Length: 306
Image (cartoon, rainbow, N blue to C red; front, side):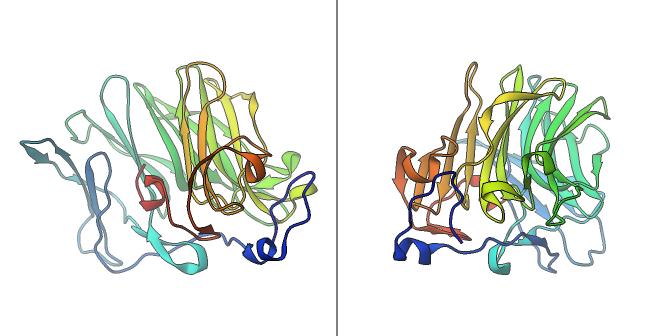
């Protein structure tokens, strides 16, 4: 499998042999206890058949003191997922801080994505908001009145895969749901490995896509999309970037394009993402051995945190 590019050069034999097919992730629930770091250290424990509701305990650490609180979860948390080649990895969850200091924690369950509201001290401040039917935590932005979530939702396409979407909740109610992939753009999102950021005016969503037509049909790349505060798609970003993206980072800038980084298996390393040219001529930050399913370097989001 080769990287899809509009004007691809003829690959060398060694480079062609380097390509591997990327498989979509399938969630699994194991019967073991596990921990996951989340804003300092967030610990979530769950079993295949727990006798009591699992808990999510935030811990804050300084040079002299350490405090913790426990928050009960209303559903099982599948802390392990099957990644590439069905290799187990920590299930992604995300914590975000609102401007007023309160927290939101997004985590997956069998009924959708749960977003748990917490006070600035880590105490539960209300019931979870459940984004029904959503798959995967791809990124989270906390607002004083709610949150925005990058996730996957049901879609109709040739691969029978999900679509990437930004879902905004205000006061416990959905205010918009904007799909970022579809038949019009010849792409799907069977997994995200993404990031969602906000600069006060617009959201930036950076995530993995699967080509479903056109020059990229059947290949994996990544996409950077911008959405307004009211859910309208904006110009900018790109439809196809790093091949077999092994890790994504996105930083919101006050104006202009957001700064983005990717671990890419086409040239094996960490690069400044630039869209369609990224696999061939993006600036190199560092070299790492990367291929579909593994990279010597990674971001926190690939270890279950963000």
